[in-house]
Image (tube, rainbow, N blue to C red):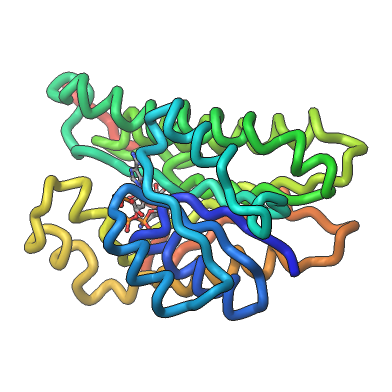
Length: 247
Ligand code: NDP
Ligand code: 8X3
């Protein structure tokens, strides 16, 4: 039985990924800050899951948790770096520096620290890393500033890992979704349920299960096959043009 570690498993894509992996017979370490949600997830899955509540921005708590995993969950074959967030939609000139720093600490620094910690074990087991980036890595939009920057880092770090891990057998994939209906917009807007509902209303967005099924597919491919980058959008979403400021 293979073991996965999924960060950000208390809601959305992470929770759905835990369910998909467990349903396919994986052992899963599920993490996030909200312990009660992790306990509920564990209760609905059973012995195949181990939960650990910690803030990924806390380097000491992260290291202590990973070092103290129970014997059965210690050998991580698949790391799903999913924990992340966007905060705010203000243009850069009006943005809050604290929100920018939180996004960088969560989406970049924490992802790098967890990957660094687990890398030697992943190499030993010829494992896999799936990083959840975003279409925001590739397509800029107003108010996306630092969030897009963090996801561009995740995308490029994934490709850099591929290069460094050449010959080790470790697979790395950057999954880059567009609009997925989760708690993402609730978090981004500071709890504005009306704004979140409005964004998704009538849009037929992707679901967390859509992305979880993609993660499971990538993780289940034969060992000789690597998906480098995978960009997904709902059919209802596409691209807009450039903007021109006229005198
Ligand atoms: P959710 O808000 O539903 O889930 C985010 C998860 O990240 C939660 O489990 C949350 O857990 C966890 N998390 C956030 N901050 C921390 C922290 N400091 N420490 C530990 N865990 C943390 O959003 P999504 O499921 O949509 O987001 C998952 C990933 O997908 C993110 O990286 C996001 O950027 C990315 N993404 C989302 C898209 C979308 O449209 N929804 C599109 C493209 C990418 P808790 O709060 O309990 O700590
Ligand atoms: C989330 C998708 O388009 O809101 O990463 O940035 S988007």
